[in-house]
Length: 94
Image: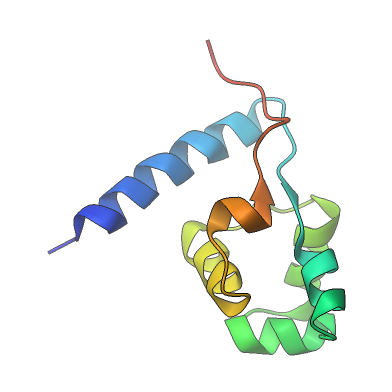
């Protein structure tokens, strides 16, 4: 049985993912956070269970993180998803 938080996160992530696919780039603060915390891409990747290439792709905006990955990254830095990923430049579907 899914919790209300899981359902709400999926709804918000789906909305933001659709926006990203239709003309927006989801920016992140991952590189900045890594440097502040003296973490390499490899160290962050191992901490959240992905490859270094995934972290690279997230940092340059070539890949949109799944909800689970976004949550893991945010939790690793003790931040909310919105504090790590910037949705302000994304165009809303009409």
